[in-house]
Length: 373
Image 1 (cartoon, one colour):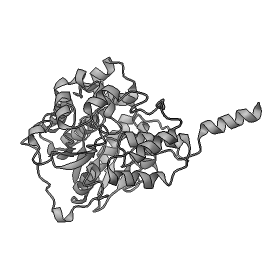
Image 2: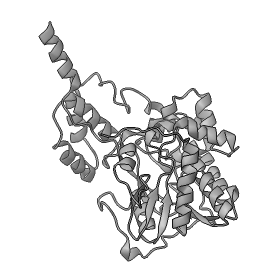
Image 3: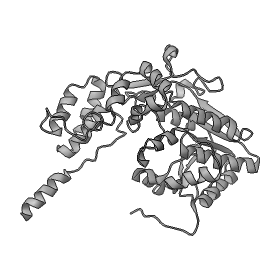
Image 4: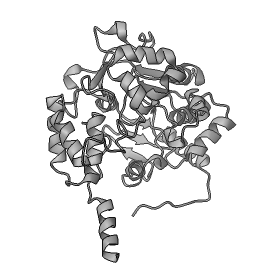
């Protein structure tokens, strides 16, 4: 059983020690950034250490195209202005597939798709890497049905490098799965905050034990510039778990489209032209019936009925088969079916929102009370 152990050392001191160890052992350093708060803090810590040692560190950003404009401005700041003498910009603007959770008829976005430059969210940056730099014959794809996706691009980027530490701003408190991923798979040496990769490479998570408040304390104390979207989310009164920056169409972040016209109206207008389903997401992304799937529509008797209807009428035959095979392994109850409905509505064929496949806890509770009564 995994448990937290508290030591007589603050998280900032621990993070600096971890980063220092990496610099002592690895010549090649690479920081993955997203333009969000965690990766901003990580980049600042790593580049500060690089500056102290008169070393260089690569800053890697895989551009999903469908981002806030403020996110791109933050990425530019980290790459070119934070510690310009110590950073090697690796800004990738290459074609890859992203799931579009806002539409069933256009279930995927091919970022930076050739021939569609007129409706790209923005023009490519001349400083970015605009073509796949590795041999196309050696490209690996996890699932050919899904196509060359985000994680395929990450895998191929990492697999073509040797003796490298890839820093990632993962924090375990964001989800139990992240906690297990770091704690159960120790990587290099006795560094429990790393995982092993091929070619003598590792992934390091020096901020894995930081909390939400630790990140903001560091930003405040060190006067680090951050993504201004956070300010607008906070002023809007959004809960802490929703104050995050990510792709605007992903299963876990599409709710941001509700506030997008208010935060960045120009970005919203570009997104309307770029993809189908955006206007619907703007209206219903936080609706308990439509896309949150917390309330059963009135014309269905159960979540099982609603699940069967959505699966039977699903437009994409290939994706429909993926859902059908997955659901065949699940239990048949309303608790499971509601989660399956959410996957269907959000076009989550990749299983990014996995189903908690277990007996309906509500039925067990009712049975218990019936026995007591």
